[in-house]
Image 1: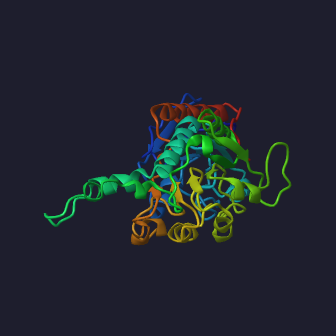
Image 2: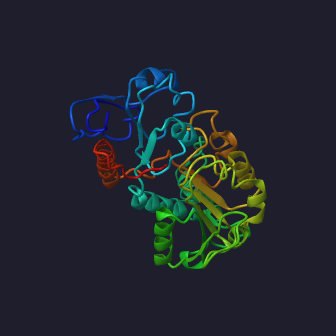
Length: 338
Protein backbone atom coordinates (compact mmCIF):
# COMPACT_ATOMS: atom_id res chain seq x y z
CA UNK A 1 0.00 0.00 0.00
CA UNK A 2 1.42 3.39 -0.98
CA UNK A 3 1.49 6.46 1.24
CA UNK A 4 -1.28 7.92 -0.90
CA UNK A 5 -3.60 4.95 -0.35
CA UNK A 6 -2.95 4.48 3.36
CA UNK A 7 -5.26 5.53 6.16
CA UNK A 8 -3.05 7.38 8.59
CA UNK A 9 -3.44 7.80 12.32
CA UNK A 10 -1.41 10.86 13.35
CA UNK A 11 -0.53 11.20 17.03
CA UNK A 12 0.99 14.35 18.48
CA UNK A 13 2.40 13.55 21.90
CA UNK A 14 3.67 17.02 22.89
CA UNK A 15 1.28 19.78 21.84
CA UNK A 16 2.08 21.90 24.90
CA UNK A 17 4.38 24.05 22.77
CA UNK A 18 2.27 24.88 19.70
CA UNK A 19 -0.81 23.96 17.72
CA UNK A 20 -0.82 20.86 15.56
CA UNK A 21 -2.06 21.77 12.07
CA UNK A 22 -4.63 20.07 9.90
CA UNK A 23 -3.15 18.13 7.00
CA UNK A 24 -4.04 18.05 3.33
CA UNK A 25 -3.27 14.44 2.52
CA UNK A 26 -4.93 11.83 0.29
CA UNK A 27 -7.86 10.02 1.85
CA UNK A 28 -9.13 10.30 5.38
CA UNK A 29 -6.95 10.39 8.45
CA UNK A 30 -7.42 10.45 12.20
CA UNK A 31 -5.53 12.69 14.57
CA UNK A 32 -4.97 12.46 18.32
CA UNK A 33 -3.42 15.48 20.02
CA UNK A 34 -2.01 15.25 23.54
CA UNK A 35 -0.80 18.30 25.42
CA UNK A 36 1.88 16.26 27.18
CA UNK A 37 2.71 12.57 27.43
CA UNK A 38 4.28 10.88 30.43
CA UNK A 39 6.54 7.86 29.83
CA UNK A 40 3.89 5.56 31.33
CA UNK A 41 1.34 6.82 28.75
CA UNK A 42 3.52 6.79 25.66
CA UNK A 43 3.16 3.28 24.24
CA UNK A 44 -0.60 3.18 24.76
CA UNK A 45 -1.03 6.47 22.93
CA UNK A 46 1.08 5.65 19.88
CA UNK A 47 0.51 1.91 19.51
CA UNK A 48 -1.77 2.43 16.49
CA UNK A 49 -0.01 5.49 15.06
CA UNK A 50 1.38 5.53 11.54
CA UNK A 51 2.78 9.04 12.12
CA UNK A 52 4.07 10.45 15.43
CA UNK A 53 4.84 14.11 16.04
CA UNK A 54 7.16 14.96 18.94
CA UNK A 55 9.53 17.72 20.03
CA UNK A 56 11.50 16.69 23.12
CA UNK A 57 9.71 13.58 24.43
CA UNK A 58 11.99 10.65 23.81
CA UNK A 59 11.20 7.78 21.48
CA UNK A 60 13.69 5.06 22.41
CA UNK A 61 14.21 1.49 21.23
CA UNK A 62 11.57 0.18 23.66
CA UNK A 63 8.98 2.37 21.94
CA UNK A 64 10.27 1.85 18.42
CA UNK A 65 10.13 -1.94 18.35
CA UNK A 66 7.64 -3.71 16.12
CA UNK A 67 5.62 -5.06 19.04
CA UNK A 68 5.00 -1.66 20.63
CA UNK A 69 4.39 0.39 17.47
CA UNK A 70 3.67 -2.05 14.62
CA UNK A 71 2.14 0.56 12.29
CA UNK A 72 4.61 3.41 12.81
CA UNK A 73 6.17 4.65 9.56
CA UNK A 74 7.04 8.33 10.08
CA UNK A 75 8.32 10.43 12.99
CA UNK A 76 8.23 14.21 12.63
CA UNK A 77 10.28 16.21 15.15
CA UNK A 78 8.93 19.76 15.48
CA UNK A 79 12.43 21.08 16.21
CA UNK A 80 15.91 21.11 14.71
CA UNK A 81 17.52 18.76 17.25
CA UNK A 82 16.98 15.04 16.72
CA UNK A 83 18.41 13.64 19.96
CA UNK A 84 14.93 12.76 21.27
CA UNK A 85 14.67 9.86 18.79
CA UNK A 86 16.76 6.68 18.76
CA UNK A 87 17.75 7.03 15.12
CA UNK A 88 19.39 3.60 14.92
CA UNK A 89 16.26 1.87 16.20
CA UNK A 90 14.09 3.83 13.76
CA UNK A 91 16.37 2.99 10.84
CA UNK A 92 16.34 -0.70 11.73
CA UNK A 93 12.54 -0.63 11.46
CA UNK A 94 12.50 1.39 8.27
CA UNK A 95 10.78 4.28 10.05
CA UNK A 96 11.57 7.60 8.41
CA UNK A 97 12.60 10.43 10.76
CA UNK A 98 12.22 14.05 9.66
CA UNK A 99 12.87 17.29 11.54
CA UNK A 100 11.95 20.94 11.07
CA UNK A 101 15.34 22.67 10.78
CA UNK A 102 16.11 26.35 11.03
CA UNK A 103 12.69 27.59 12.07
CA UNK A 104 13.81 29.09 15.38
CA UNK A 105 17.22 30.49 14.42
CA UNK A 106 16.25 34.14 14.87
CA UNK A 107 14.58 33.69 18.25
CA UNK A 108 17.31 31.44 19.68
CA UNK A 109 20.14 33.67 18.47
CA UNK A 110 18.49 36.78 19.92
CA UNK A 111 17.91 34.95 23.20
CA UNK A 112 21.58 33.94 23.23
CA UNK A 113 22.68 37.55 22.88
CA UNK A 114 20.23 38.51 25.63
CA UNK A 115 21.77 35.89 27.91
CA UNK A 116 25.20 37.33 27.14
CA UNK A 117 24.17 40.82 28.25
CA UNK A 118 22.34 39.50 31.32
CA UNK A 119 25.45 37.59 32.38
CA UNK A 120 28.17 40.10 31.50
CA UNK A 121 26.20 42.97 33.08
CA UNK A 122 25.06 40.71 35.96
CA UNK A 123 21.45 41.80 35.71
CA UNK A 124 20.08 39.28 38.22
CA UNK A 125 22.73 40.01 40.84
CA UNK A 126 22.20 43.76 40.44
CA UNK A 127 18.41 43.42 40.50
CA UNK A 128 18.49 41.36 43.68
CA UNK A 129 20.93 43.71 45.41
CA UNK A 130 18.92 46.78 44.36
CA UNK A 131 15.56 45.44 45.53
CA UNK A 132 16.63 43.62 48.70
CA UNK A 133 15.39 45.47 51.78
CA UNK A 134 16.75 44.16 55.12
CA UNK A 135 14.18 42.81 57.56
CA UNK A 136 15.63 45.05 60.28
CA UNK A 137 13.70 48.37 59.98
CA UNK A 138 16.75 50.26 61.22
CA UNK A 139 18.81 49.15 58.22
CA UNK A 140 18.52 50.52 54.69
CA UNK A 141 19.31 48.91 51.35
CA UNK A 142 22.93 48.07 50.60
CA UNK A 143 22.98 50.64 47.81
CA UNK A 144 21.67 53.38 50.09
CA UNK A 145 24.05 52.39 52.88
CA UNK A 146 27.23 52.03 50.80
CA UNK A 147 26.53 54.64 48.15
CA UNK A 148 27.30 52.25 45.28
CA UNK A 149 26.89 48.64 44.18
CA UNK A 150 29.73 48.72 41.66
CA UNK A 151 31.48 45.83 43.44
CA UNK A 152 28.57 43.61 42.35
CA UNK A 153 29.36 44.35 38.70
CA UNK A 154 33.16 44.37 38.88
CA UNK A 155 35.24 41.46 37.62
CA UNK A 156 37.15 39.22 40.00
CA UNK A 157 40.25 41.44 39.67
CA UNK A 158 38.22 44.51 40.67
CA UNK A 159 38.17 45.99 37.15
CA UNK A 160 35.02 46.96 35.30
CA UNK A 161 33.18 44.62 32.92
CA UNK A 162 34.18 44.19 29.30
CA UNK A 163 32.36 46.01 26.51
CA UNK A 164 31.25 44.27 23.33
CA UNK A 165 34.26 45.68 21.49
CA UNK A 166 36.52 44.02 24.07
CA UNK A 167 34.96 40.58 23.74
CA UNK A 168 36.44 37.62 21.89
CA UNK A 169 33.61 35.26 21.01
CA UNK A 170 34.11 31.56 20.47
CA UNK A 171 31.34 29.67 18.67
CA UNK A 172 31.15 25.91 19.01
CA UNK A 173 28.74 24.56 16.42
CA UNK A 174 28.66 26.38 13.10
CA UNK A 175 25.32 25.52 11.58
CA UNK A 176 22.53 28.01 10.89
CA UNK A 177 22.35 29.05 14.55
CA UNK A 178 26.11 29.49 14.92
CA UNK A 179 26.24 31.59 11.77
CA UNK A 180 23.39 33.81 12.98
CA UNK A 181 25.05 34.37 16.37
CA UNK A 182 28.29 35.17 14.55
CA UNK A 183 26.52 37.87 12.51
CA UNK A 184 24.88 39.42 15.59
CA UNK A 185 28.13 39.35 17.55
CA UNK A 186 30.06 41.06 14.74
CA UNK A 187 27.36 43.70 14.47
CA UNK A 188 27.95 44.44 18.16
CA UNK A 189 31.66 44.88 17.48
CA UNK A 190 32.85 41.58 18.90
CA UNK A 191 35.72 39.58 17.46
CA UNK A 192 34.52 36.09 16.53
CA UNK A 193 36.37 32.78 16.32
CA UNK A 194 34.78 29.59 15.00
CA UNK A 195 35.95 26.47 16.81
CA UNK A 196 36.84 23.28 15.00
CA UNK A 197 35.47 20.03 16.37
CA UNK A 198 37.31 18.71 19.39
CA UNK A 199 40.35 16.70 18.36
CA UNK A 200 40.14 17.70 14.68
CA UNK A 201 42.67 19.68 12.67
CA UNK A 202 41.35 23.21 11.99
CA UNK A 203 39.93 23.81 8.52
CA UNK A 204 39.78 27.12 6.71
CA UNK A 205 39.27 30.03 9.08
CA UNK A 206 38.42 27.86 12.09
CA UNK A 207 40.66 27.59 15.12
CA UNK A 208 41.42 24.55 17.25
CA UNK A 209 38.85 23.65 19.86
CA UNK A 210 41.35 24.12 22.69
CA UNK A 211 42.43 27.51 21.33
CA UNK A 212 38.82 28.66 21.23
CA UNK A 213 38.49 27.76 24.90
CA UNK A 214 41.67 29.63 25.83
CA UNK A 215 41.04 32.78 23.79
CA UNK A 216 37.32 33.32 24.29
CA UNK A 217 35.83 35.79 26.72
CA UNK A 218 32.40 34.55 25.62
CA UNK A 219 31.76 30.97 24.51
CA UNK A 220 28.49 30.22 22.70
CA UNK A 221 27.39 26.59 22.38
CA UNK A 222 25.24 25.94 19.29
CA UNK A 223 25.95 22.29 18.48
CA UNK A 224 23.72 19.18 18.52
CA UNK A 225 23.72 16.69 21.37
CA UNK A 226 25.12 13.34 20.33
CA UNK A 227 27.14 10.58 22.03
CA UNK A 228 30.28 12.50 20.99
CA UNK A 229 29.17 15.80 22.56
CA UNK A 230 27.88 14.61 25.95
CA UNK A 231 29.87 16.46 28.65
CA UNK A 232 31.92 18.13 25.92
CA UNK A 233 32.46 21.01 28.34
CA UNK A 234 33.54 19.69 31.74
CA UNK A 235 36.20 20.31 34.39
CA UNK A 236 39.23 20.19 32.07
CA UNK A 237 37.62 22.58 29.60
CA UNK A 238 36.64 25.07 32.31
CA UNK A 239 40.19 25.05 33.64
CA UNK A 240 41.41 25.97 30.15
CA UNK A 241 39.11 29.00 29.93
CA UNK A 242 39.82 32.56 31.06
CA UNK A 243 38.62 33.55 34.54
CA UNK A 244 36.81 36.44 32.79
CA UNK A 245 35.01 34.14 30.33
CA UNK A 246 31.27 33.55 30.06
CA UNK A 247 29.61 30.33 28.86
CA UNK A 248 26.29 30.67 27.01
CA UNK A 249 24.46 27.42 26.17
CA UNK A 250 21.49 27.53 23.80
CA UNK A 251 22.27 24.12 22.30
CA UNK A 252 21.13 21.09 24.30
CA UNK A 253 21.35 19.90 27.87
CA UNK A 254 24.00 17.29 28.55
CA UNK A 255 26.65 19.00 26.41
CA UNK A 256 27.81 20.84 29.55
CA UNK A 257 28.62 18.87 32.70
CA UNK A 258 26.31 20.74 35.09
CA UNK A 259 28.16 19.77 38.27
CA UNK A 260 31.46 20.84 36.73
CA UNK A 261 29.87 24.14 35.70
CA UNK A 262 28.65 24.76 39.24
CA UNK A 263 32.13 24.09 40.63
CA UNK A 264 33.74 26.36 38.02
CA UNK A 265 31.42 29.23 38.99
CA UNK A 266 31.88 28.66 42.71
CA UNK A 267 35.65 28.59 42.35
CA UNK A 268 35.89 31.60 40.04
CA UNK A 269 37.33 29.47 37.26
CA UNK A 270 35.01 31.34 34.87
CA UNK A 271 33.15 34.61 35.40
CA UNK A 272 29.61 33.54 34.65
CA UNK A 273 27.27 31.34 32.67
CA UNK A 274 23.80 31.23 31.21
CA UNK A 275 21.84 28.27 29.93
CA UNK A 276 18.46 27.65 28.38
CA UNK A 277 18.86 23.86 28.37
CA UNK A 278 19.39 21.09 30.92
CA UNK A 279 20.32 17.43 31.07
CA UNK A 280 16.88 16.64 32.54
CA UNK A 281 13.85 18.49 31.16
CA UNK A 282 11.42 19.67 32.36
CA UNK A 283 13.82 20.59 35.14
CA UNK A 284 12.77 20.87 38.77
CA UNK A 285 14.00 20.43 42.31
CA UNK A 286 16.75 17.82 42.49
CA UNK A 287 17.14 17.49 38.71
CA UNK A 288 20.14 19.80 38.30
CA UNK A 289 22.90 21.18 40.53
CA UNK A 290 22.27 24.51 38.79
CA UNK A 291 18.96 24.71 40.69
CA UNK A 292 20.54 23.96 44.06
CA UNK A 293 21.04 26.41 46.91
CA UNK A 294 24.78 26.40 46.09
CA UNK A 295 24.02 28.19 42.82
CA UNK A 296 21.77 30.88 44.27
CA UNK A 297 24.35 33.69 44.62
CA UNK A 298 26.39 32.93 41.51
CA UNK A 299 26.55 34.84 38.23
CA UNK A 300 24.30 32.28 36.62
CA UNK A 301 21.27 33.05 34.44
CA UNK A 302 18.78 30.25 33.84
CA UNK A 303 15.87 30.18 31.40
CA UNK A 304 13.47 27.23 30.89
CA UNK A 305 14.23 26.07 27.31
CA UNK A 306 12.21 28.88 25.77
CA UNK A 307 14.87 30.51 23.61
CA UNK A 308 12.95 29.19 20.60
CA UNK A 309 9.67 30.84 21.60
CA UNK A 310 8.45 33.64 19.34
CA UNK A 311 5.32 34.18 17.29
CA UNK A 312 7.23 33.74 14.04
CA UNK A 313 8.81 30.53 15.31
CA UNK A 314 5.37 29.10 16.11
CA UNK A 315 4.15 29.92 12.62
CA UNK A 316 7.30 28.50 11.04
CA UNK A 317 7.18 25.22 12.99
CA UNK A 318 3.50 24.62 12.35
CA UNK A 319 3.99 25.26 8.63
CA UNK A 320 7.07 23.03 8.54
CA UNK A 321 5.30 20.13 10.30
CA UNK A 322 2.36 20.41 7.92
CA UNK A 323 4.62 20.48 4.86
CA UNK A 324 6.70 17.55 6.13
CA UNK A 325 3.74 15.25 6.78
CA UNK A 326 2.05 16.17 3.51
CA UNK A 327 5.22 15.72 1.44
CA UNK A 328 5.80 12.25 2.87
CA UNK A 329 2.19 11.20 2.31
CA UNK A 330 2.56 12.25 -1.33
CA UNK A 331 5.75 10.22 -1.67
CA UNK A 332 8.13 13.20 -1.70
CA UNK A 333 9.72 13.28 1.77
CA UNK A 334 11.56 16.42 2.93
CA UNK A 335 13.86 17.21 5.85
CA UNK A 336 14.94 13.59 6.22
CA UNK A 337 17.29 12.99 9.13
CA UNK A 338 18.22 9.53 7.89
